[in-house]
Length: 530
Image (cartoon, rainbow, N blue to C red; front, side, top):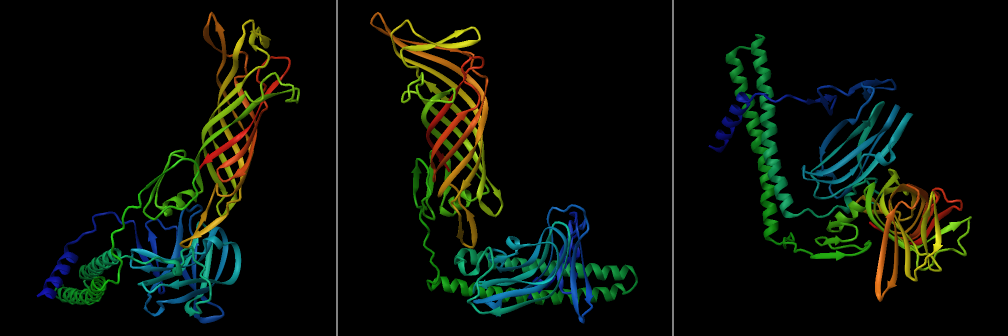
Protein backbone atom coordinates (compact mmCIF):
# COMPACT_ATOMS: atom_id res chain seq x y z
CA UNK A 1 0.00 0.00 0.00
CA UNK A 2 2.80 2.42 0.90
CA UNK A 3 4.46 1.88 -2.46
CA UNK A 4 1.18 2.42 -4.35
CA UNK A 5 0.50 5.68 -2.49
CA UNK A 6 4.04 6.94 -3.17
CA UNK A 7 3.80 5.92 -6.82
CA UNK A 8 0.49 7.73 -7.29
CA UNK A 9 1.60 10.86 -5.41
CA UNK A 10 4.74 11.52 -7.43
CA UNK A 11 2.94 10.83 -10.70
CA UNK A 12 0.25 13.39 -9.86
CA UNK A 13 2.80 15.97 -8.67
CA UNK A 14 4.91 15.55 -11.81
CA UNK A 15 1.94 15.87 -14.17
CA UNK A 16 0.21 18.79 -12.42
CA UNK A 17 3.19 20.95 -11.37
CA UNK A 18 4.00 23.93 -13.61
CA UNK A 19 7.04 26.14 -13.77
CA UNK A 20 5.37 29.35 -12.66
CA UNK A 21 8.52 31.00 -11.32
CA UNK A 22 11.03 32.47 -13.71
CA UNK A 23 13.99 30.19 -14.33
CA UNK A 24 17.34 31.74 -13.59
CA UNK A 25 19.42 28.97 -15.10
CA UNK A 26 19.92 25.25 -15.38
CA UNK A 27 22.50 22.51 -15.02
CA UNK A 28 24.43 21.63 -18.17
CA UNK A 29 26.98 18.96 -19.01
CA UNK A 30 30.25 18.79 -20.89
CA UNK A 31 30.97 15.09 -21.28
CA UNK A 32 30.68 13.80 -17.70
CA UNK A 33 31.36 17.21 -16.10
CA UNK A 34 28.44 19.34 -14.89
CA UNK A 35 28.05 23.09 -14.48
CA UNK A 36 25.40 25.67 -13.70
CA UNK A 37 24.59 28.04 -16.53
CA UNK A 38 22.59 31.19 -15.73
CA UNK A 39 20.03 32.63 -18.15
CA UNK A 40 22.67 35.08 -19.32
CA UNK A 41 25.83 32.94 -19.62
CA UNK A 42 29.12 34.34 -18.37
CA UNK A 43 31.29 31.43 -19.50
CA UNK A 44 31.47 29.03 -22.41
CA UNK A 45 32.11 25.42 -21.33
CA UNK A 46 33.38 23.10 -24.05
CA UNK A 47 35.94 20.43 -24.93
CA UNK A 48 38.39 19.63 -27.66
CA UNK A 49 40.37 16.56 -28.65
CA UNK A 50 43.91 16.31 -27.40
CA UNK A 51 46.16 16.36 -30.49
CA UNK A 52 48.65 14.15 -28.67
CA UNK A 53 46.06 11.55 -27.65
CA UNK A 54 42.90 10.95 -29.67
CA UNK A 55 41.28 9.17 -26.72
CA UNK A 56 41.76 12.13 -24.40
CA UNK A 57 39.61 15.26 -24.12
CA UNK A 58 40.71 18.71 -23.01
CA UNK A 59 38.03 20.64 -21.12
CA UNK A 60 37.77 24.43 -21.57
CA UNK A 61 36.28 27.27 -19.54
CA UNK A 62 36.26 30.63 -21.35
CA UNK A 63 34.73 33.93 -20.25
CA UNK A 64 32.29 35.48 -22.73
CA UNK A 65 31.89 38.89 -21.08
CA UNK A 66 34.40 41.71 -20.69
CA UNK A 67 33.71 42.07 -16.97
CA UNK A 68 32.55 39.31 -14.63
CA UNK A 69 31.84 39.38 -10.93
CA UNK A 70 31.90 35.72 -9.95
CA UNK A 71 33.32 32.47 -11.28
CA UNK A 72 32.60 29.57 -13.59
CA UNK A 73 33.28 25.96 -12.63
CA UNK A 74 33.02 22.43 -13.97
CA UNK A 75 32.64 19.68 -11.40
CA UNK A 76 32.00 16.07 -10.52
CA UNK A 77 30.68 14.47 -7.34
CA UNK A 78 31.48 10.95 -6.13
CA UNK A 79 30.67 8.86 -3.09
CA UNK A 80 33.20 9.12 -0.30
CA UNK A 81 32.77 5.48 0.71
CA UNK A 82 36.10 4.29 -0.76
CA UNK A 83 38.04 7.26 0.63
CA UNK A 84 36.89 7.53 4.26
CA UNK A 85 39.72 7.90 6.74
CA UNK A 86 42.25 8.36 3.94
CA UNK A 87 44.26 11.19 2.41
CA UNK A 88 43.17 11.93 -1.15
CA UNK A 89 45.05 13.84 -3.81
CA UNK A 90 43.35 15.48 -6.76
CA UNK A 91 45.79 16.26 -9.56
CA UNK A 92 45.56 17.55 -13.10
CA UNK A 93 47.21 19.63 -15.78
CA UNK A 94 46.07 23.23 -16.29
CA UNK A 95 46.84 25.84 -18.95
CA UNK A 96 45.65 29.45 -18.72
CA UNK A 97 45.41 32.52 -20.91
CA UNK A 98 44.88 36.12 -19.73
CA UNK A 99 43.46 35.13 -16.34
CA UNK A 100 42.99 38.46 -14.57
CA UNK A 101 41.88 37.20 -11.16
CA UNK A 102 42.76 33.54 -10.58
CA UNK A 103 42.04 29.95 -11.62
CA UNK A 104 42.68 26.59 -10.01
CA UNK A 105 41.62 23.09 -9.11
CA UNK A 106 39.24 22.60 -6.21
CA UNK A 107 38.01 19.76 -4.02
CA UNK A 108 35.43 19.66 -1.22
CA UNK A 109 34.49 16.91 1.25
CA UNK A 110 30.92 17.13 2.57
CA UNK A 111 28.68 15.65 5.20
CA UNK A 112 25.46 15.82 3.18
CA UNK A 113 24.63 19.51 2.63
CA UNK A 114 25.04 20.29 6.32
CA UNK A 115 28.76 20.70 6.82
CA UNK A 116 31.92 21.10 4.76
CA UNK A 117 34.51 18.78 6.30
CA UNK A 118 37.48 19.73 4.10
CA UNK A 119 38.01 22.24 1.31
CA UNK A 120 40.65 23.74 -0.96
CA UNK A 121 40.20 25.82 -4.13
CA UNK A 122 43.80 27.06 -4.56
CA UNK A 123 42.73 30.68 -4.03
CA UNK A 124 45.75 31.30 -1.80
CA UNK A 125 48.02 30.04 -4.61
CA UNK A 126 45.81 30.72 -7.62
CA UNK A 127 46.99 30.53 -11.23
CA UNK A 128 47.12 33.97 -12.84
CA UNK A 129 48.02 35.37 -16.24
CA UNK A 130 49.08 33.20 -19.17
CA UNK A 131 50.73 29.86 -18.41
CA UNK A 132 51.56 26.70 -20.36
CA UNK A 133 50.54 23.23 -19.21
CA UNK A 134 51.58 22.51 -15.64
CA UNK A 135 50.54 19.90 -13.09
CA UNK A 136 48.74 21.08 -9.95
CA UNK A 137 47.60 19.21 -6.84
CA UNK A 138 45.04 19.52 -4.08
CA UNK A 139 45.38 17.28 -1.00
CA UNK A 140 42.64 16.69 1.59
CA UNK A 141 41.95 14.20 4.34
CA UNK A 142 38.51 12.55 4.13
CA UNK A 143 36.94 12.15 7.61
CA UNK A 144 34.90 9.00 8.30
CA UNK A 145 31.75 11.14 8.53
CA UNK A 146 32.03 12.20 4.89
CA UNK A 147 29.18 11.37 2.51
CA UNK A 148 30.49 12.81 -0.76
CA UNK A 149 33.50 14.36 -2.49
CA UNK A 150 33.08 17.07 -5.10
CA UNK A 151 35.93 18.29 -7.28
CA UNK A 152 36.62 20.27 -10.41
CA UNK A 153 38.29 23.34 -11.83
CA UNK A 154 37.25 26.99 -11.78
CA UNK A 155 37.94 30.35 -13.37
CA UNK A 156 37.31 33.49 -11.34
CA UNK A 157 36.67 36.60 -13.42
CA UNK A 158 37.74 36.78 -17.04
CA UNK A 159 40.21 34.70 -19.06
CA UNK A 160 40.43 31.15 -20.38
CA UNK A 161 41.51 27.89 -18.77
CA UNK A 162 42.14 24.41 -20.19
CA UNK A 163 42.46 21.28 -18.03
CA UNK A 164 43.09 17.58 -18.57
CA UNK A 165 44.10 14.34 -16.83
CA UNK A 166 42.10 15.13 -13.67
CA UNK A 167 42.24 12.23 -11.23
CA UNK A 168 41.68 11.28 -7.60
CA UNK A 169 44.02 8.92 -5.79
CA UNK A 170 44.66 7.77 -2.24
CA UNK A 171 48.10 8.78 -0.99
CA UNK A 172 50.14 8.36 2.17
CA UNK A 173 48.78 10.07 5.29
CA UNK A 174 52.15 11.75 5.87
CA UNK A 175 51.41 14.18 3.02
CA UNK A 176 50.20 17.52 4.40
CA UNK A 177 46.78 18.85 3.48
CA UNK A 178 46.63 21.94 1.26
CA UNK A 179 43.12 22.98 2.26
CA UNK A 180 41.89 26.12 3.96
CA UNK A 181 39.53 23.75 5.78
CA UNK A 182 41.52 20.68 6.79
CA UNK A 183 39.81 17.34 7.24
CA UNK A 184 42.08 16.24 10.08
CA UNK A 185 41.01 19.26 12.13
CA UNK A 186 37.32 18.73 11.54
CA UNK A 187 35.21 18.80 14.69
CA UNK A 188 32.86 15.99 15.66
CA UNK A 189 29.34 16.33 14.28
CA UNK A 190 26.61 16.34 16.91
CA UNK A 191 23.74 13.86 17.00
CA UNK A 192 21.20 16.61 16.29
CA UNK A 193 23.06 17.85 13.22
CA UNK A 194 23.46 14.29 11.89
CA UNK A 195 19.78 13.49 12.37
CA UNK A 196 18.68 16.71 10.66
CA UNK A 197 21.07 16.10 7.74
CA UNK A 198 19.67 12.61 7.14
CA UNK A 199 16.11 13.94 7.35
CA UNK A 200 16.92 16.67 4.84
CA UNK A 201 18.50 14.10 2.52
CA UNK A 202 15.36 11.93 2.59
CA UNK A 203 13.31 14.97 1.64
CA UNK A 204 15.82 15.92 -1.05
CA UNK A 205 15.73 12.44 -2.60
CA UNK A 206 11.98 12.67 -3.06
CA UNK A 207 12.19 16.18 -4.53
CA UNK A 208 14.96 15.25 -6.96
CA UNK A 209 13.12 12.19 -8.27
CA UNK A 210 9.87 14.15 -8.63
CA UNK A 211 11.65 16.84 -10.59
CA UNK A 212 13.32 14.27 -12.83
CA UNK A 213 9.97 12.55 -13.46
CA UNK A 214 8.35 15.88 -14.30
CA UNK A 215 11.03 16.56 -16.92
CA UNK A 216 10.55 13.09 -18.39
CA UNK A 217 6.77 13.55 -18.61
CA UNK A 218 7.23 16.96 -20.27
CA UNK A 219 9.52 15.32 -22.85
CA UNK A 220 6.88 12.66 -23.54
CA UNK A 221 4.20 15.35 -23.95
CA UNK A 222 6.42 17.11 -26.48
CA UNK A 223 6.78 13.86 -28.41
CA UNK A 224 2.97 13.58 -28.46
CA UNK A 225 2.61 17.14 -29.77
CA UNK A 226 5.14 16.36 -32.51
CA UNK A 227 3.32 13.16 -33.44
CA UNK A 228 6.26 10.95 -32.51
CA UNK A 229 4.18 8.84 -30.09
CA UNK A 230 0.46 8.36 -29.65
CA UNK A 231 -1.46 9.51 -26.56
CA UNK A 232 -2.06 5.87 -25.59
CA UNK A 233 1.64 5.05 -25.84
CA UNK A 234 2.49 8.21 -23.95
CA UNK A 235 0.30 7.22 -21.00
CA UNK A 236 2.04 3.85 -20.81
CA UNK A 237 5.46 5.50 -20.92
CA UNK A 238 4.49 7.90 -18.15
CA UNK A 239 3.40 5.03 -15.93
CA UNK A 240 6.66 3.22 -16.60
CA UNK A 241 8.72 6.32 -15.77
CA UNK A 242 6.70 6.89 -12.60
CA UNK A 243 7.28 3.29 -11.53
CA UNK A 244 11.02 3.61 -12.01
CA UNK A 245 11.18 6.85 -10.01
CA UNK A 246 9.00 5.37 -7.28
CA UNK A 247 11.30 2.37 -6.92
CA UNK A 248 14.34 4.65 -6.86
CA UNK A 249 12.86 6.77 -4.09
CA UNK A 250 11.98 3.70 -2.04
CA UNK A 251 15.45 2.20 -2.42
CA UNK A 252 17.37 5.39 -1.63
CA UNK A 253 15.12 6.38 1.26
CA UNK A 254 15.51 2.88 2.76
CA UNK A 255 19.28 3.39 2.86
CA UNK A 256 18.95 6.74 4.65
CA UNK A 257 16.36 5.35 7.06
CA UNK A 258 18.77 2.57 7.95
CA UNK A 259 21.43 5.22 8.69
CA UNK A 260 18.96 7.13 10.83
CA UNK A 261 18.00 4.01 12.79
CA UNK A 262 21.66 3.22 13.42
CA UNK A 263 22.25 6.82 14.50
CA UNK A 264 19.43 6.61 17.03
CA UNK A 265 20.78 3.31 18.34
CA UNK A 266 24.26 4.81 18.71
CA UNK A 267 22.73 7.66 20.63
CA UNK A 268 20.92 5.26 22.94
CA UNK A 269 24.19 3.37 23.45
CA UNK A 270 25.84 6.61 24.62
CA UNK A 271 28.17 7.09 21.68
CA UNK A 272 27.29 10.78 21.51
CA UNK A 273 27.87 13.34 24.21
CA UNK A 274 24.41 14.87 24.40
CA UNK A 275 24.84 16.78 27.61
CA UNK A 276 23.28 20.17 27.11
CA UNK A 277 26.03 22.71 27.02
CA UNK A 278 25.62 25.05 29.91
CA UNK A 279 26.20 28.74 29.66
CA UNK A 280 29.79 29.69 30.30
CA UNK A 281 28.73 32.89 32.00
CA UNK A 282 29.61 36.48 31.19
CA UNK A 283 32.91 38.28 31.53
CA UNK A 284 32.96 42.06 31.80
CA UNK A 285 36.29 43.44 30.62
CA UNK A 286 37.78 46.91 30.86
CA UNK A 287 40.75 47.52 28.58
CA UNK A 288 42.31 45.43 25.82
CA UNK A 289 41.77 41.67 25.97
CA UNK A 290 43.61 39.06 23.90
CA UNK A 291 42.95 36.15 26.24
CA UNK A 292 40.84 33.20 25.10
CA UNK A 293 37.34 32.80 26.49
CA UNK A 294 35.27 29.64 26.84
CA UNK A 295 33.24 28.20 23.99
CA UNK A 296 29.98 29.32 25.61
CA UNK A 297 31.24 32.37 27.46
CA UNK A 298 30.20 35.89 26.61
CA UNK A 299 32.76 38.66 26.89
CA UNK A 300 31.43 42.19 27.29
CA UNK A 301 34.26 44.66 26.72
CA UNK A 302 33.29 48.05 28.07
CA UNK A 303 36.16 50.04 26.58
CA UNK A 304 35.95 48.63 23.03
CA UNK A 305 32.12 48.52 23.07
CA UNK A 306 32.09 44.91 21.83
CA UNK A 307 30.32 41.72 22.87
CA UNK A 308 31.85 38.35 21.92
CA UNK A 309 29.81 35.13 22.02
CA UNK A 310 32.47 32.46 22.54
CA UNK A 311 36.13 32.39 21.60
CA UNK A 312 35.48 31.46 17.95
CA UNK A 313 33.37 34.58 17.49
CA UNK A 314 36.07 36.65 19.19
CA UNK A 315 38.87 35.27 16.99
CA UNK A 316 36.89 35.62 13.76
CA UNK A 317 35.83 39.20 14.42
CA UNK A 318 39.31 40.26 15.48
CA UNK A 319 40.68 38.67 12.30
CA UNK A 320 38.48 40.64 9.89
CA UNK A 321 40.24 42.74 7.30
CA UNK A 322 38.85 45.88 8.96
CA UNK A 323 38.44 46.07 12.72
CA UNK A 324 37.47 48.95 15.00
CA UNK A 325 39.02 50.27 18.20
CA UNK A 326 38.20 52.78 20.91
CA UNK A 327 41.21 55.04 21.45
CA UNK A 328 42.13 56.91 24.63
CA UNK A 329 45.36 58.84 25.07
CA UNK A 330 46.68 61.16 27.77
CA UNK A 331 49.96 62.78 28.66
CA UNK A 332 52.02 65.94 28.79
CA UNK A 333 51.41 68.92 26.50
CA UNK A 334 53.55 71.96 25.81
CA UNK A 335 54.70 74.19 22.96
CA UNK A 336 57.74 74.38 20.73
CA UNK A 337 58.98 77.96 20.44
CA UNK A 338 61.59 78.68 17.80
CA UNK A 339 62.27 74.96 17.60
CA UNK A 340 62.81 74.52 21.33
CA UNK A 341 60.78 73.25 24.30
CA UNK A 342 63.15 74.24 27.11
CA UNK A 343 62.56 77.47 29.06
CA UNK A 344 58.89 77.12 28.22
CA UNK A 345 56.28 79.66 29.32
CA UNK A 346 54.10 76.73 30.43
CA UNK A 347 54.38 74.21 33.24
CA UNK A 348 55.84 70.91 32.08
CA UNK A 349 53.89 68.69 34.47
CA UNK A 350 50.81 70.86 34.80
CA UNK A 351 50.11 71.10 31.05
CA UNK A 352 48.47 68.02 29.60
CA UNK A 353 46.39 66.59 26.76
CA UNK A 354 43.58 64.07 26.36
CA UNK A 355 42.32 62.31 23.27
CA UNK A 356 39.23 60.13 22.85
CA UNK A 357 38.09 58.62 19.57
CA UNK A 358 37.27 55.67 17.41
CA UNK A 359 39.54 54.20 14.74
CA UNK A 360 39.26 51.65 11.97
CA UNK A 361 42.19 49.39 11.21
CA UNK A 362 42.22 47.94 7.66
CA UNK A 363 44.71 45.31 6.50
CA UNK A 364 46.21 46.71 3.29
CA UNK A 365 47.16 43.38 1.67
CA UNK A 366 44.53 40.66 1.68
CA UNK A 367 46.94 37.88 2.68
CA UNK A 368 49.69 39.82 4.47
CA UNK A 369 49.22 41.04 8.01
CA UNK A 370 52.08 43.53 8.40
CA UNK A 371 50.75 46.78 6.95
CA UNK A 372 47.50 48.42 8.08
CA UNK A 373 45.78 51.70 7.35
CA UNK A 374 44.52 53.17 10.62
CA UNK A 375 42.03 56.01 10.37
CA UNK A 376 39.17 57.46 12.36
CA UNK A 377 37.84 60.46 14.27
CA UNK A 378 39.00 61.87 17.62
CA UNK A 379 38.34 64.72 20.02
CA UNK A 380 41.57 66.23 21.40
CA UNK A 381 41.91 68.42 24.49
CA UNK A 382 45.14 70.43 24.67
CA UNK A 383 45.72 72.23 27.97
CA UNK A 384 48.48 74.75 28.72
CA UNK A 385 49.20 76.13 32.21
CA UNK A 386 51.27 79.36 32.08
CA UNK A 387 54.04 80.00 34.61
CA UNK A 388 54.72 83.10 36.73
CA UNK A 389 51.10 84.15 37.40
CA UNK A 390 50.38 84.85 33.72
CA UNK A 391 47.34 84.59 31.47
CA UNK A 392 46.47 85.30 27.84
CA UNK A 393 45.16 88.68 26.70
CA UNK A 394 43.93 89.44 23.18
CA UNK A 395 45.77 92.44 21.73
CA UNK A 396 44.29 93.12 18.31
CA UNK A 397 45.29 90.29 16.00
CA UNK A 398 47.86 88.99 18.45
CA UNK A 399 47.40 87.12 21.70
CA UNK A 400 49.91 87.98 24.43
CA UNK A 401 50.86 86.09 27.55
CA UNK A 402 51.06 88.74 30.30
CA UNK A 403 51.39 88.92 34.07
CA UNK A 404 47.92 88.93 35.62
CA UNK A 405 47.06 91.71 38.12
CA UNK A 406 45.32 89.14 40.27
CA UNK A 407 47.07 86.59 42.44
CA UNK A 408 46.14 83.46 40.48
CA UNK A 409 45.79 80.04 42.06
CA UNK A 410 45.48 78.46 38.60
CA UNK A 411 45.65 79.60 34.99
CA UNK A 412 44.76 77.23 32.19
CA UNK A 413 44.30 77.67 28.44
CA UNK A 414 42.33 74.88 26.73
CA UNK A 415 41.71 74.16 23.05
CA UNK A 416 39.34 71.42 21.89
CA UNK A 417 39.79 69.96 18.40
CA UNK A 418 37.91 67.50 16.23
CA UNK A 419 40.54 65.70 14.15
CA UNK A 420 40.78 62.87 11.63
CA UNK A 421 43.99 60.90 12.29
CA UNK A 422 45.55 58.70 9.60
CA UNK A 423 48.45 56.31 10.24
CA UNK A 424 50.32 53.60 8.41
CA UNK A 425 50.58 50.91 11.07
CA UNK A 426 53.14 48.11 11.15
CA UNK A 427 51.61 45.29 13.20
CA UNK A 428 53.84 42.32 14.04
CA UNK A 429 51.05 40.17 15.53
CA UNK A 430 51.38 37.60 12.72
CA UNK A 431 48.91 34.91 11.70
CA UNK A 432 47.30 32.01 13.51
CA UNK A 433 45.83 28.78 12.17
CA UNK A 434 42.46 27.88 13.69
CA UNK A 435 40.27 25.02 12.44
CA UNK A 436 41.93 25.13 9.06
CA UNK A 437 41.44 28.89 8.71
CA UNK A 438 44.09 31.60 8.79
CA UNK A 439 43.36 34.28 11.37
CA UNK A 440 45.06 37.63 10.81
CA UNK A 441 45.50 38.93 14.33
CA UNK A 442 45.93 42.59 15.27
CA UNK A 443 47.00 44.42 18.45
CA UNK A 444 48.58 41.20 19.72
CA UNK A 445 52.27 42.13 19.52
CA UNK A 446 54.54 45.09 18.79
CA UNK A 447 53.03 47.90 16.72
CA UNK A 448 54.43 51.04 15.08
CA UNK A 449 52.31 53.81 13.61
CA UNK A 450 53.48 56.68 11.38
CA UNK A 451 51.15 59.41 10.15
CA UNK A 452 49.36 62.57 11.05
CA UNK A 453 46.06 64.31 11.63
CA UNK A 454 43.98 67.25 10.48
CA UNK A 455 40.90 68.89 11.89
CA UNK A 456 39.12 71.96 13.20
CA UNK A 457 39.16 73.95 16.41
CA UNK A 458 35.84 73.47 18.23
CA UNK A 459 36.46 75.96 21.01
CA UNK A 460 39.10 77.84 23.00
CA UNK A 461 38.71 78.66 26.67
CA UNK A 462 40.80 80.32 29.37
CA UNK A 463 40.17 79.34 32.98
CA UNK A 464 41.58 81.37 35.87
CA UNK A 465 41.13 80.77 39.58
CA UNK A 466 41.88 83.26 42.36
CA UNK A 467 40.73 84.43 45.79
CA UNK A 468 38.64 87.61 46.23
CA UNK A 469 37.36 88.80 49.58
CA UNK A 470 37.76 85.34 51.10
CA UNK A 471 35.83 83.86 48.16
CA UNK A 472 37.25 81.41 45.63
CA UNK A 473 36.50 82.70 42.14
CA UNK A 474 36.71 80.85 38.84
CA UNK A 475 36.52 82.81 35.59
CA UNK A 476 35.90 81.06 32.29
CA UNK A 477 36.44 83.12 29.14
CA UNK A 478 35.40 81.61 25.78
CA UNK A 479 36.43 82.99 22.42
CA UNK A 480 38.72 82.34 19.49
CA UNK A 481 41.75 84.04 21.15
CA UNK A 482 43.13 84.39 17.59
CA UNK A 483 43.85 80.68 17.54
CA UNK A 484 44.03 78.78 14.26
CA UNK A 485 40.66 77.49 13.10
CA UNK A 486 42.32 74.51 11.44
CA UNK A 487 44.89 72.15 12.89
CA UNK A 488 47.18 69.65 11.24
CA UNK A 489 50.26 67.80 12.38
CA UNK A 490 52.40 64.69 12.54
CA UNK A 491 52.06 61.82 14.99
CA UNK A 492 53.62 58.48 15.74
CA UNK A 493 53.24 55.70 18.28
CA UNK A 494 55.11 52.54 19.22
CA UNK A 495 54.04 49.93 21.70
CA UNK A 496 52.91 46.44 22.53
CA UNK A 497 49.36 45.10 22.15
CA UNK A 498 46.91 47.85 23.15
CA UNK A 499 49.41 50.19 24.90
CA UNK A 500 51.72 52.60 23.05
CA UNK A 501 54.01 55.56 23.62
CA UNK A 502 52.40 58.43 21.67
CA UNK A 503 54.02 61.57 20.21
CA UNK A 504 52.17 64.41 18.39
CA UNK A 505 53.40 67.67 16.90
CA UNK A 506 51.18 70.42 15.44
CA UNK A 507 52.58 71.78 12.17
CA UNK A 508 50.01 74.58 12.42
CA UNK A 509 50.90 77.34 14.96
CA UNK A 510 48.72 77.74 18.03
CA UNK A 511 47.97 81.41 17.18
CA UNK A 512 47.41 82.66 13.64
CA UNK A 513 49.14 86.05 13.66
CA UNK A 514 51.57 86.02 16.57
CA UNK A 515 55.05 87.08 15.55
CA UNK A 516 56.57 84.27 17.61
CA UNK A 517 55.19 80.97 16.34
CA UNK A 518 54.37 78.38 18.95
CA UNK A 519 53.37 74.81 18.05
CA UNK A 520 51.76 72.28 20.38
CA UNK A 521 53.74 69.13 21.12
CA UNK A 522 52.35 66.22 23.13
CA UNK A 523 53.90 63.09 24.62
CA UNK A 524 51.88 60.46 26.42
CA UNK A 525 50.40 57.01 26.56
CA UNK A 526 47.87 55.72 24.05
CA UNK A 527 45.45 52.81 24.46
CA UNK A 528 43.82 51.13 21.42
CA UNK A 529 41.05 48.92 22.81
CA UNK A 530 40.45 46.36 20.05
